[in-house]
Length: 319
Image 1 (tube, rainbow, N blue to C red):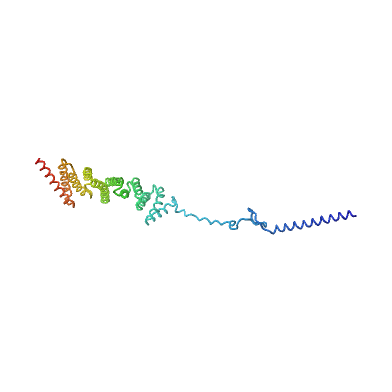
Image 2: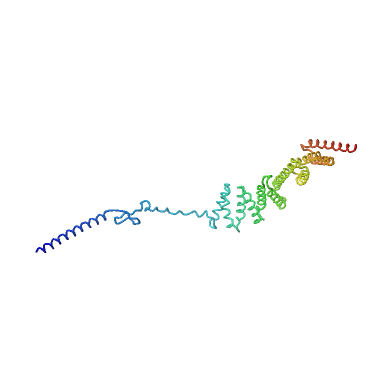
């Protein structure tokens, strides 16, 4: 009986422990089901809140793509439309915009009546924008491709004008100036009755005078540094090549003065000969430039040279 009482007591204790354990488990489950906490990488749901910020979680809706205006893309289908665009840019002096379209249109226009017009306008866009090297190239390309076109002569003279505009300041290397003169001479030979002949002759005068000025500055440098023999040679050559130039009269006067000073500083036995060179230079100067403002001063050197010759000759006679 006592043993049975002990067993009953054990069962009661075990039952109490089991009931307490069951109650505690239910409380924990309830707590978990009604609580929120953060687990990285897990989406929100089932009572668990993820750690991704709400502003990143909301994806921006992509704006619907707008269709590009394919008319502006140069192709056979859009040729006429873009040709009109290029014309409008050209007429509004928007030459770079026009040139960009014309460059794309030209390959598509080959074999059509618009090809030569497009190429001419393309070259002219560069000229009007003062890109003379590119203009000269494309004008000459036009002449090569369309030699029988009614615009061929105009394109040729425009290429010459472009080269003319490339010619640099006189003190710099004059290779471009010489090239421009050659191009002008070729144009004149090809179109001897051209309506642009007066314009071409004016350009030739400017270019030749530029070369003359460069050589004339060399003449003056020789004279100012008292390099008398070099001055004589330089002026003689200058007057052969540039007798037409604006500097010819002054060069001839410098020769008179140069020869006088050269004679004066020479050794005694050379003086008479070199004073005579002064007189020869004066005679040539007076014949070629009778209206020169330097003629009066040149005459003074000639008179003094004459006196020196007479003086030297008398002294030799007396000896």
